[in-house]
Amino acid sequence: MPVKKQPSGTSGHDEAVLAYPSLHWSRETGWSAVPERLAAEAPLAIEIAYERLGQAVRKVLAVTMRTPGSDEELALGFLYGEGLIGSVSDVRKNVAAEANSRGEQISTQVVHLLTPPRDDLQRVSRGLITSSACGMCGRTTLQGLSFAPPLRPSESAALAGEWIAALPEKLREQQKLFSATGGSHGAGLFDDRGSLMVVREDVGRHNAVDKVIGAALLGKIPLAGRGLVLSGRISFELMQKAAVAGVATVVAVGAPSSLAVNLAQSAGITLIGFTRGSRFNVYTHAERLEPAAARP
Image 1 (cartoon, one colour):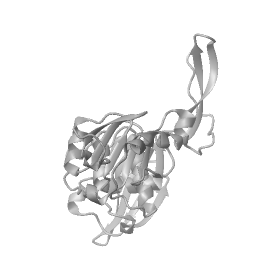
Image 2 (cartoon, helix red, strand yellow; image 1 turned 135 degrees about the vertical axis):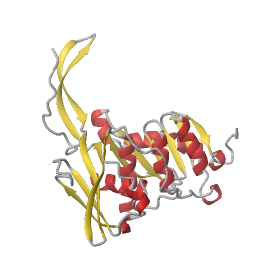
Image 3 (tube, rainbow, N blue to C red; image 1 turned 180 degrees about the horizontal axis):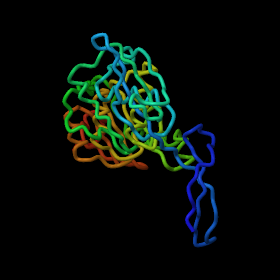
């Protein structure tokens, strides 16, 4: 008999973890009722507000399905990736609301801009409800976005194979939500010594990256020349976020898509995938690797 899923509370992670009843089956013990902890997923409207010609404007950019928590960082990272802000100095205030500008009673993060967005960037607003797996859903071009050029290899430390291979495990050790639920993605910002500076989690891969970028903006941590380590695969949308931020290196546990590789090549990013155990694959800009590394 199926068990109706009803939330029964949280467990140690505020709203990020929900307890649900479930049925468990194993060959050894058969059926049993087992409470499960799940990563929460709930809608968040991301809005901008500004004044244009003396008139107050507030509009929904997107409604994303995310894990509650770090909503301020998520909104900032999203706007940064869309080219609507270049730093926190472009923001007058960033506040939470219980309803969006359409009157819908959902969690909303309203970012008040100091100046109106450029006319070409106003077309960024898609007003779409996106899943947690959706990044730039609705975007068909990169028009209006500018990529920050990453540091040239001569300006940054060479990437050592040993610490590249160790990055996913370092990320995993800090993924408390994943440890509790097994249902979240992780993203981390690392420096040129392979040390993690910021780690965030979310049910959505793109949300996790937005939260990392937003946290770096709030903490005034330079993004240019840094690296991103990702717990899953590498999509075009994730590479786009890295390129806009000026990230020099992306390391992931999973595989890249063909478009992700093409974008990494053109944006000057060293792209590394299938980073598992003691091995990984380098797809672009291997010149950043330690001198002893084999060249294709």
